Every structure is written in structure tokens, then in C-alpha cells.
Amino acid sequence: MTMTTGRLAAPDLAGLTLRVHDGGTEIAAALAPIAMAANLAEDVDFSVTPTELENWLSYAGDHFDPARDVVLAEVDGTLVAYAWVEWVDTTEGNREFRLGGYVHPDWTGRGIGRHLLAWQEAHVPTLPAARESTRPLVYGTWAPERRVAKRRLFERAGYETVRFFFDMRRPDLENVEVPPLPEGIEIRPMGHDRDSLKRLWDADSEAFRGDHWGGFDDSEANFERAMADPDLNPDLYVVAWDGDEIAGGVTNAIWSEDNAAFNRRRGWLETVFVRRPWRRRGLGAALVARSLVRLREAGMEEAMLGVDSANPSGALGLYERAGFVVHNRSFALQRPVGGDA
Image 1: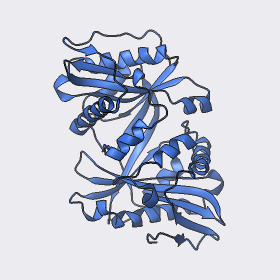
Image 2 (image 1 turned 180 degrees about the horizontal axis):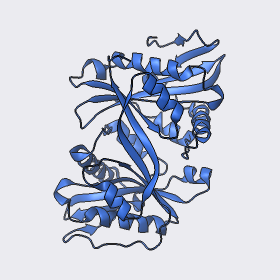
Image 3 (image 1 turned 180 degrees about the vertical axis):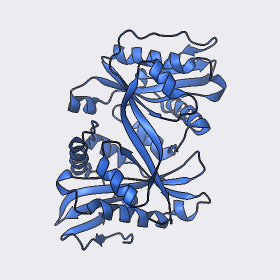
């Protein structure tokens, strides 16, 4: 199956066609129910909303272009699934093309996921990011442990698990022990202006590149997408300063539509970072504790965060000491581009 700008036939399922998305945002309202139904069917307790998808489709860049990198699956004109490709340069030296997608549970078990995966794998070599890269190229995807069918699909296609990640949950926000800040460090409010938020974004990206496994899209398009997130609230952030330098921070968030969908009051520590010169001084624990207090003051009853199970900076232990326990496990799977399936 090869990439075209029109329809791609999948003849072994009558009426199935794959169509490259035209880049518009109006389709978000049709995509969200597919993703949400897939999550609910496999007890993955995260919502996917039209607002979130509209924002995702609104920003095109080198790493992801909605008019190029999203494919829609239709059966006799009815939208039943969708998939996408985006890429990052990883700290392991690879260029990873990340493959995501959802099939509505009413249509699983009919080979649609396999056709979407074939489209994604054929699409990657056509991209400038693949043709021009001097890095090794790999396909990658993410699968929550409960998403058994997705993991089976990719394993049958030759993908191997290369890393485990945890979603960790603190079930209450009471009795938070707040350690003192390291000497010379203070917490100051974060500005809402673009320059202030870009400075925080850059500090976070620098810390990620230093020691974390995997890759992060720190492109301008992704920054603009983050700034347009309707749940963006810098008043929830906890940012540590050493004079005029950002030493570390936590970008906290409350996913309002997600909480409404599951009738909960959950806050997220979306990113937790300490820049290298300020590590091993207790700053991470101080930031996490203050974030829990900040979320409690905002009316939340529990907190979540994601962590690499093998994080070299000891983040897993830090979060366990802060009262977090493993809530979900996810698999990171990869195989080389051009390798045998």
C-alpha cells in the first residue's frame, strides 16, 4: 500500500477505503467518539475530546502536518478509524516515527488496524524527515497494558518492547509533607505572556534532552499547540528560580473535560523537571510536594503523573516517596524502518 493524496484501496474488507485527511479541524467532532469508544472498550480511563483534537489538528509543522500525516478509514463512507504519524529525535540517537491510531470497537477484528499500520509504515519513507536524516530510523508506538489488541498487532508486525512507563496516582491530596527548598532557591509566579512561557518550555526541553529516554517534539508548532490548550493555566505551575535562572519546575494541569467525563477531580503533574546544575539537592521533592498543595488548593482530590520506569535520575523513587503508586503500565514498542516485519 503506497501513499497517495486520494483514496487507498483495502480490497480484503468490502467497502473499506483509506483516505488522507485534508487538514481541516472540523473532523475533530467525528474523530473524538472513535477514540473515546476505543478507550472505554478497553478500560483505558482517559478521554479524547473534540476540543483536544481540534487543537491538535490546528498546527502544522515539520514533525506533524495534519494534511499529510493523518489517514482516515471509512467503510461504505462511514468513518470507523483513524491513524497518524509524527516524528521526534530521541536521546538514544534515533529518529523515531511515532505511530498512533484508534479503531472504533464496533469495527475491530476485521483487519482495519493492520491496513492503517501498513499505510503508516509506507508513509514514513516518503517524508523529508526520513529521506534527509543521518540518524537511524525507527518506527515506534505506545500501548497501555490494557490495550492488548494493539500490542498484539504491533508484535505480529515485528515490533519489540523497548521500555516500560508508568502512570502513577496519588489517591488523595491530604497530609502532604512539604520539604524546604534548597538554599538560594525560591518559588515565583510564572508569567502568562508568551516569552515567559517559552522560557519555561525551553528549560523543560533542555532538562529532558539531558537525561531522559525517548524524544520530545520541542518545535515551534508544538509550542504553539501547547499554548492554545484550553486547559493551559500557568497559575497552577510551580517554578523554582535561582536568581534569574529557572532551576526546575512542574507544569501542573487540570483536564476539565476529562474530569467531567469520568466524574473525578484529578490534577496532573504534566512535566516535572530539574535542570542538571540544581540536581541532587532535594529540589524535585520540594517541587512535587508544592504541586500537590497547589492542585489541592485548586479543588482537586487526586493527582497523576507519568514516569519512565527506568529513569536514571531516580524519579520513580521520588514519586513513590511522595505518595504515588503505579496506576497503569504502558509499553514502548519499536522496530527499525526497513527492517524485517
